[in-house]
Length: 317
Image 1 (cartoon, one colour):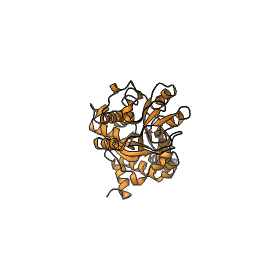
Image 2 (tube, rainbow, N blue to C red):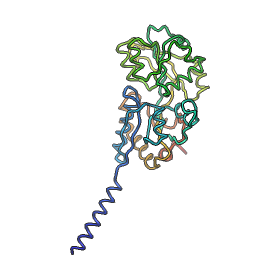
Image 3 (cartoon, helix red, strand yellow):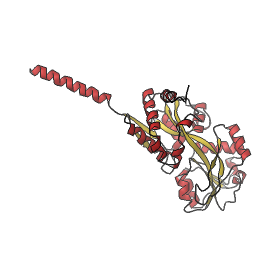
Image 4 (cartoon, one colour):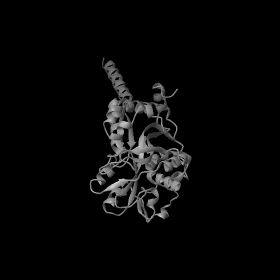
């Protein structure tokens, strides 16, 4: 009797142990950006939606945006990350900051929303067109960042170089805002989905404007670098800027790497889109994330898990 009882208990313990392993949560982290940008709040909403579905325990972490996030994914240091489609284009093709090491293991999960080139101007800077940046103090993005890569591309099309400026300052979003507050720069580039918290904060203390690009320049830029699309930042997005601003935009994407399992990426993708209403409610830019545009502007191959989901939805034949 004792032997039978012991065997029964052992069997139950084995069964409970197996069940515990089988139901153990999968953990996925999402690299976002700084707290003053757009990636951070939307990343938090995506993580909550994915966790809510029950198959994955998902967390959003602050990050250093596109270039740093691309490197994190390529090195398999994190499972999912926000990036810009221009950065992944340069990464897989071994250009600009990736010229010595093309990254071939990047995979796409979804295209999210356009990220606009904000060229913020001090109202008293006298800058009316892009050529007016000559001889000015300009924030060109953090060194080696996606923003700085965009600035290099735009400057090339405009026929400008950093040497044409009075000073090129390599600044992230928050530092750009602070330099304006201290009257240390005349213009600064910020690449993010509007409204950008750092710019909204800046407009409460300083009178600033946004540079509007002319149609001919936008057409030339798109021809030279197809990941740039023509877009508009609507008037009244920021205090004191009442007119629409014509500007280039790139696409925000979610990426992973090729060693994350097909099932995990499928579960992540499905949970994200099933929870899209919560993501829409998280941030003004979140409302622009829609299944119908999930495959637009991708510059790296889809992960098989994401591809499986989109096939089920009829987006891929």
